[in-house]
Image (cartoon, rainbow, N blue to C red):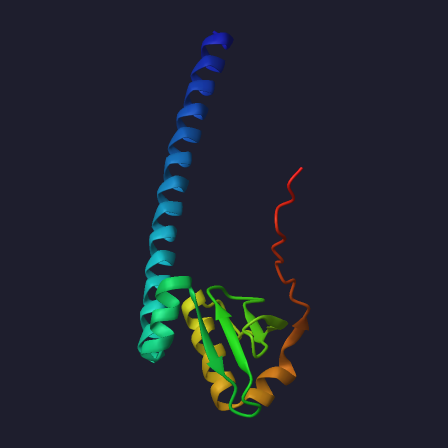
Length: 146
């Protein structure tokens, strides 16, 4: 009798766990869909604010360049939400990285738009609150013949 009760309880527990796992998976899929929708809306809004040249850059390489309003320096904003702004030299090579993001849980498109507007309208204030970081330049070396 005790064995029968234990077997029934074990089956019930496994069914409950399986049902809970299905519910959790369904919830994860729904949240992923919502997040994908938010990301798509953010990119759509960003694209509306990009110039035709910036749109072409973004379509080709998932970044676009912006000119700072105060210094005239060129910055490259890469797709992402942090450590995605690089200051470029005259040859287009990154010389310094800047990390600044608006408050709140925003998707990449919204963060990139905020960074673009900040650099184009109040560059100094944006850089005052930004964290500076060194940018590692990828160097390509010619292959050695052995």
